[in-house]
Image 1 (cartoon, rainbow, N blue to C red):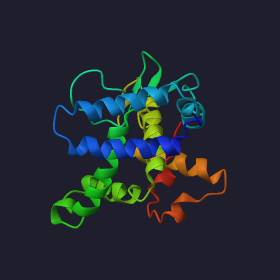
Image 2: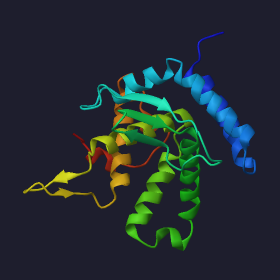
Image 3: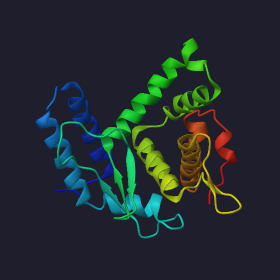
Image 4: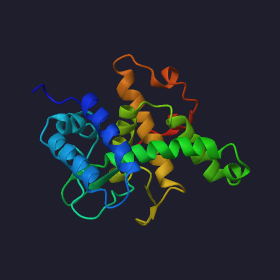
Length: 212
């Protein structure tokens, strides 16, 4: 058997996810397929490569690992796309959550066309940013959300004030996404690929985010 690649694996995930979305609960066949694929990925070198490229370069994350999430009980995968377990020092990737995040980006673009989508600045800003991120190809979206969880694990958007009090950013998830895109852009720029211009992403606030 040829070595498993992320490109072929992600295409399989997309196919199984479409079946999972169409099926009615308890969706045992589709969940078994997602779990089987996740277990095979976790035995491959894909998870090691993801950790090496996107996790280990960041201070405090040098020993963290990456694993694909499998559903051990229940009939519904969680909403999150990636989640860090400090106890296990693992970032779990939930492909179902990644695909749903991509759907949320498409929905944000549609909502911006309505008055409700522009009612408050914070919500409008986030939806506008998601609409831009939706231009990224599927695998790049995976990398982005993995980096967002690195930002979350490192608490890059939290500021320690005098006296030790921790101040949270007004929209912590938005700030983490800004940082994640900045890091993703730098990663591809190292090999000469300018993803901002290639995918026509018109958002420059991420240039303000330096991180820790």
